[in-house]
Length: 437
Image 1: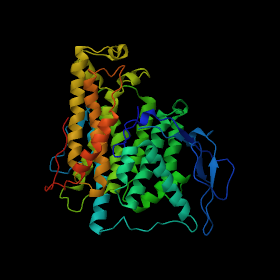
Image 2: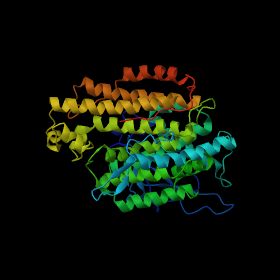
Image 3: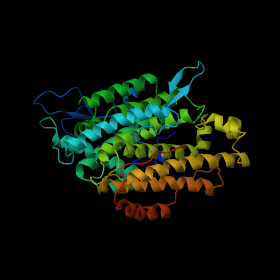
Image 4: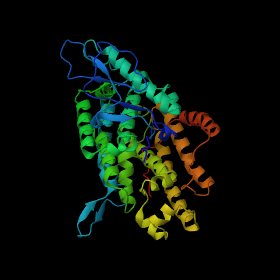
C-alpha cells in the first residue's frame, strides 16, 4: 500500500521503480560528483571538529537495515473535542482511547511548537545554515539532490515548490525524500526482506538525524531542516509505526483501526509539513484547526489510495477496508478476491467514496490558511488526488481490474485552477470545524 504523501503527492508515484541503496563499507572519495541514478552517498562516522566531513559513494547492493528505494507514495481545541468517540469500551469493559484521540494528542503537541514560533516571532526563512566548517557546499549538494528526486517523481508538486522561499523549498524537499524512503522499506522491491528489526534500525537512524548525526547526504538535509523549523520527531516515528503495521497486519476490523493506519502512513506527513509550509500571517484560524485540515488531507489521500488499489492489494492478500462495514453491506473478503462488481459492491463503494470526499472537504478549509507561497502545490495535490475518486465512479466502481488515474489533460487543467485557489486570502474566521465521518 503506497503512502499518500499529502502535501507532496505524485499521482503516478507507485509506478516508479528506480532504487537507491547504501551501506557502511565502500570505497571512499575525498570529493564527489553529483550522484548517479543507482548510487547514494554515505557519511562515515561523526564529524570531528575542524575537519572536513567526507562522503562516499556506495553500491546499490545495500545492507537491508539501511536500504531504501524511491518509488511513488490540528484539531481545533474546543470545550468539546471534535472527536466522535474519544474513548471506546473494550471486551473487558475497560475504557480505551480511540484512534482519533491518540492522533489528536500528537496534533496538539506539534501545533504547540508552531504557536511558540509564531509568538516569539522567529523567521525561519532567513535563519542561516548551521553547519560544520567545510561542509556548507556538501549540505547544498544534499538539498539539491533532494530537489532532483522531487522533480523526477513529483513533477507537479515540484513545480509548485518553486514559488516558495528558498529555505522552505529545500526543507520540504528533505521531508519528501525521507517519507519516500520510509515508504519503500515495506512497499518497494526489497520489501519482502524488510524485518521489524530493520525498521527499528531505521527509527534509531531517525533519532540520530534529530540529534545532528546524519548517516548520508539525504539524512543531512533533513537533519539541517529540523534545526531550522519547529518540527517534532513524533510524526516521523509514527510513520515508521505505520510501516510496522503493514508488516504484521492485513485486515482492519473497523474504521477506527483504519483511521489510525491512515494517520500513521499519510496523516503524519501533514504534521511534518505544516511547520515548513507556514501559516499565513493574516489567518485568524487557530493553529490546531490548520493541523486538523492537514491531517484530513492525509486521511483523504490514503483512503483514495485504498479505494483505487483494492484489486492490487487483494492480489497481495491484503484488504484495507473496514471488515464490519463490508459485513453490513453483505460482502466478505471472498467477494473482493473474486473481483466482481455487483450492486452490493457499488453501494459499499459509494459510502467509502463519500467518506473520503468529506475528508477532502475538511482539508480544503485549511489550505487557504497556509502561507500564500505554499498553497499552490498543496491545492494541486488535493485537486488531482480528489479526481481519482471521480475516475473510480467513471469506471463503474471496478477497482478490481481497472486502475483509476487522472489523464494528462486533466492534470494540466488542474494547475491553473489550483493557482487560482492559491491566491484566495485566508478566511476571516477564528476557527475551522472538524470533519465527521
